[in-house]
Every structure is written in C-alpha cells, then in structure tokens.
Image 1 (cartoon, rainbow, N blue to C red):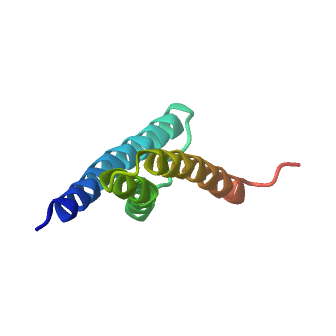
Image 2: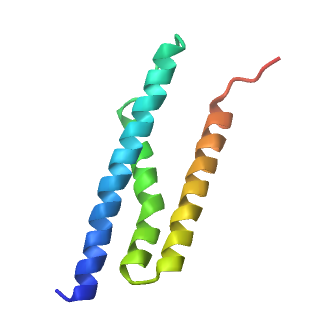
Amino acid sequence: MTTRGARILAAVVVALGVGGVAGGVSVWLLRFIALASGDRPDAGTTGTFFGVVAYVIVLLPGAVAVALGRRRTGRVLLAAGCVVRGEVGTVERDATASPSG
C-alpha cells in the first residue's frame, strides 16, 4: 500500500471512530434531556444508527481532504459538514414537532 493510500485509510478509520463517538454522545444526550424533561425518548436503534451514520458522512470528506494534504480544503469541508449536520438536525426536529395552536 502506498503512503497516500495508507493516509486515506487512516482518515477513513479516524472519521469512523470520531463520527461514531460524536453520534453516540449526541444521541445519548438527546435521550438524557428527554428523560430529564419527563418525555419518553423515542429514538430507537434505527434512530441511533442513522444519527451516527450522519456524523460519519459529514466527517468523511474533510478527513480525506486533510489526509491528501489539502489543509484548507479539509478544514472548510469539516466546518461545512458541521453546519450541514446542525441544519439537518434542526429540519428533522421542526418536521416532527407537533403544530402549536
């Protein structure tokens, strides 16, 4: 395996690890907040899985760009991924919210 290939493989492994931990922690925090507020946490195994997958998908392009030596591009992709993930979470929350009034 070439050095470039090894760096890309390492970036993918790091993105999987960090994305998995970040997704797991965020789902855990959402469940904790739901329990603390007296609600029933409704994110099951499927919701947890897709939450973790979303974080991994967001981190992967930036991690690979940084591994290829494109530092600024990688940072921009990582920052853009964080913004996109935050906005997707907001849209999901708004779509499932009950109408008030």
